[in-house]
Image (cartoon, rainbow, N blue to C red; front, side, top):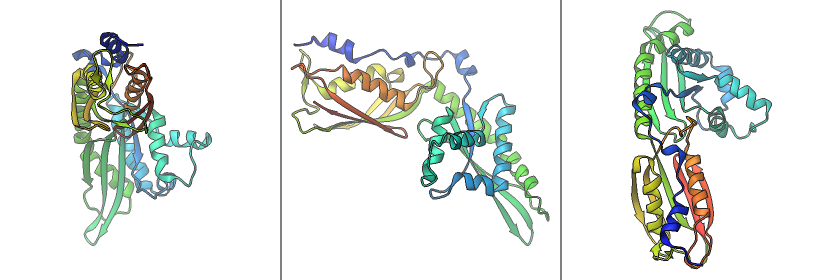
Amino acid sequence: MKYNILILLMIFTLPLVAQNEPTKSESATIQPTIMVIPFTKKSQDVRRTLDNNKQVRIAITLVKESFDNRGFTTVDFSAKLKEMELRAAFTSDNPSDIKTEIVRYSGADIYIEVDAQMVRDASGNSAQVILTGYDASTGNSLSNKVGFSNKFYTEDFGKLTAKAVEKISEDFLNVMQSKFSEIIENGRFVAVEFAIGGEDDLTMSSEVGEDELPLADMLELWMEENAYKGYYHIQGATDLKVIFDQVRIPIKDSKKRNYTSNKFALDIYKSLKKFKTIEGDKLSVKKSVKGNTIFITLSL
């Protein structure tokens, strides 16, 4: 059965509830949910890092308090870690994934990695604190600051850490607020890669609908309708792949719920599942999301 292209477009272009643009007053009142976490190297265990490094625990507490004092909603990392441990949500042989899972499970919009080190030399002792803020949905860096306390002949590294955090927290918070306001106004960037995955005759040049538009063109029409404020950019297109390297999506939907790259991928998935070729064949659709990149595989 053949479909008129207008009907096909109506099926494929599902209206996304997330596309409502925030007003200026809404942009001013929407605040991110923030979680402050310890910095760990790839092979380090996050629980061991938190338990064994008093300076990191102090720095995390102080940074979290700074956000609390500004009226932000914060998520307690230690509490989430304990909760996930009780639920056995991860295994100890996969330490690099624990942090990722906690961030995802927390529902935070932004997470702040904190690293704190003690510096000792003949002229005195000091603390170094490194703060790095990330968009939880995409993993993109939002703010970076390094702070040092003054040098003193003291072993009270808690106070030194507090001094180092105090020096950089205001600038760090201001940059974070500015970047988050930008995201509210303009959306965040994701990349979307469409690829042909089967051994059938489907290609990006396969004609779709009664007007016989190529599949690649139909994907672009969908992106034009559903990208936030209509902004997208195509990196390249072949018979087997179409890559949108920059697509804007909103940070919240119309009900003020988090709108993540995974939810955008789900909207693509639901639309493509209803998509049919001119021969009436439905597309088989598979999706995966890694950071801020969405992978969609199509076949018949």
